[in-house]
Amino acid sequence: MKGYFVVYENEDEQFDIKCDLRPDVEDEVPELQSLLYSEIENTCNVLKALDNTSDEIKRKYFKKLLSLAQVGLVPENSAQPKMAMVALDKLKTEMLHIEGKRIKNRYMKRLGITAIILSAIVGCMMCLLFHLLKSNVFCMMGYTWFGAMIGAWVSYGARKFQLEFEDMSLIEKDMLEPIIRLIYIGICSLIFELFLSCGFATITVGNITTESIKNYQEIQILVGIICGLVESKMGIDIYKRANSVLETELEKE
Image 1: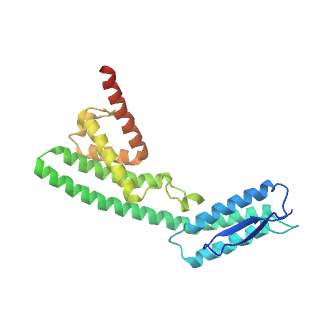
Image 2 (image 1 turned 135 degrees about the vertical axis):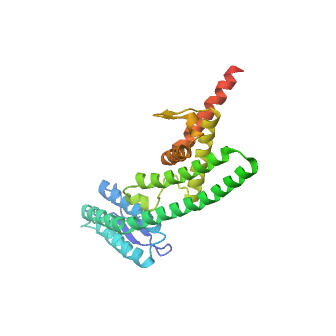
Image 3 (image 1 turned 90 degrees about the horizontal axis):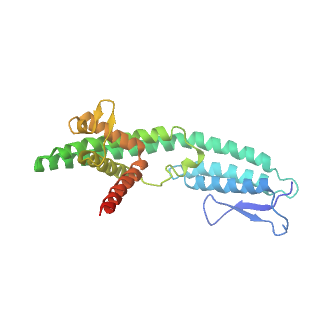
């Protein structure tokens, strides 16, 4: 197969591959070469996003990627895109096996440490407010926040049980930093707790009712854990609930 590209290292950007069409190309690029080109670009982007990997190791991956790109896209009369695709799959598997474990463990440690720090800060704030205002609401909020931090940490481990190759460059699709994610989840859990306390929402699961939430700390923690486990859905559900309440009031008027 004829190679339709000129492939070389981009001297203006580290770990970047330039794939230019040959100047004499007039017909359409074969589908397999187009697919290979796209996969090489995606792999190159993931490689550049490995922030905590040494340049030496990244250079090793890069050389393999550049070599297989040249095999599959360059030779004028003997391009081997199928062979290059096989080599690319093996390279991605190698990168995922070596880098994926480190990336996931590092993120879970970061998420866990951030959750502990936020729980300590919020716990101290709620204790202070409880002693100043003598309201059990702040105790409930403290327990719920603590549960939400646990739920969020467990949720990531469950959702990302096995990392995909693209996850190495974008660990979470919503692109939130751990501290922003945890604060968002924590606030959503507190809003949901207030909804239950004020009667905006009710739950009945087994022997657990909305009223029992006010009296048992373990149930308050459990509510937080559930909020943390469902993560982003909480914000959407809270928005829908608040919107339905407003619409109902407007209809009455």
